[in-house]
Length: 322
Image 1: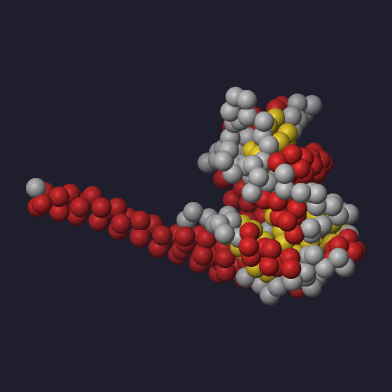
Image 2 (image 1 turned 30 degrees about the vertical axis):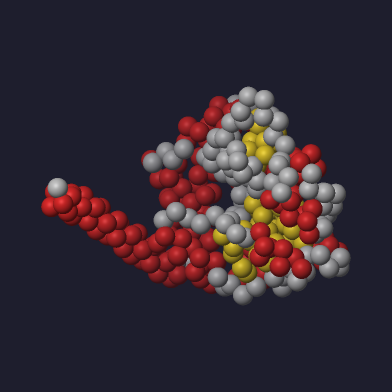
């Protein structure tokens, strides 16, 4: 029995480990080659490559394309089928361009980002920071959202951003290196809460993206385009505990290839961390995101399964006290 078990281990587990290591090596090699290529290409060529990547992603691989169409048609029923197709095709193209631009600008440095990102509303940052409680930034996957942290740092602000780790370690390692710039700190979603509170106590800026689907034990259900969407209550909790004001900030792509990053007047933190207060605040933040998405639907990630988590029967969506 013991020998048979050993044969089973070597015949199944070892080849799987070798395959996994080989796949990681290949992914890392491809990404390294891509970085070298992008670093020597002019920006128009980089964007052309991004358009091709977006086309392959959306029209050849058709990654979540059906989900994207269904979400868009349900959320914006006033759009014709032809308009929906245009929005979805443009979205995939933009996602490819966004990824290539992120690599190019990360390699070129913050000064290049500052040259192409028009910033509107920096006075709202300054006014909020005068309180000495730090600033919480509410944002979403709109426009080239990867450039927004770099643009914030390029304008002299220290920023911590909560991000999800990419499952593939090779890809995650490359992205982490690209994101590494002076004044920027990227925190994994796990155990980031305490680090964010420390940054706020130092009167720094903390950014949170809250337009991603959450599991029912992590999120609260709020209305998003007329349908319950399980949403992180972390921003509301953090604001209530730290008393830091919240500034909505979004970046959008302009027709000339540049970007506009707009900061809006601050929102007061919730009065307490009671479930009703947290739910009300999270609904407000989500409504702001919905309004921004409506302005330029092609610049939001419709292929993300935003409504994947469904509320249970009788579930009111209120946040549990922490």
